[in-house]
Image (tube, rainbow, N blue to C red; front, side, top):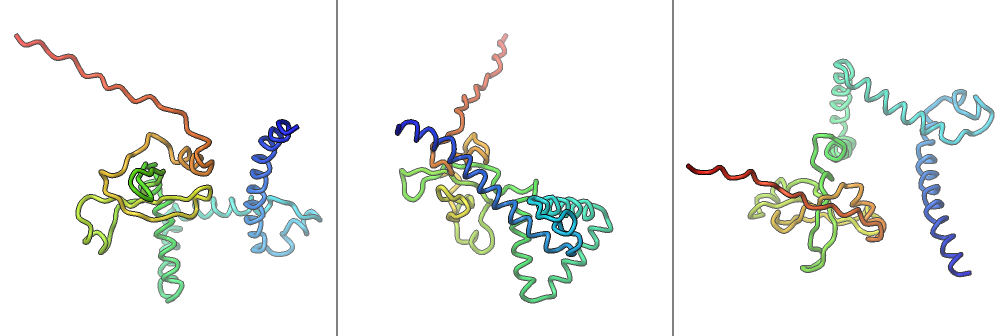
Length: 211
């Protein structure tokens, strides 16, 4: 009986957690319906609440915003909008900080969260997985002697909280592992390990004979 109960848990727990996360995401995105006039909301159009309709509206808003700002006119409007926000004291500091972080994390040209690392933390001889976020800057760089790397060490099983540390480059190991694989490894507390990869064999060209 205990064996069957554990087997049922192994099947239902991942499904229940997946459905709970999806419901949380869809419920949050459905809040965008508050931006629509009452006559355009699903209750007025269809006579009942339609789950997921706000998610579709949110995705369409994001897509249209990207299409508009990709052309010259939209880019100019975005620049004027940012200049307006920069004139508001409190909004300026919040918006500029959030924009810098989002540009760093979401930009395809950025290096943040592009590499999974193996670092010694919280003490020597104890290893954990971390993500490279960049290099130290500002006045911090003036006080560090040598080549350092900015690293984010997530906690388990919630990777959204963690620690920001700076390691010497020679003290970190770059893993042959994607960020998604590393996140699964962290969230599962080491249970779901990525498949092992064979080290690449470098073949040297044959030496030319000397005459």
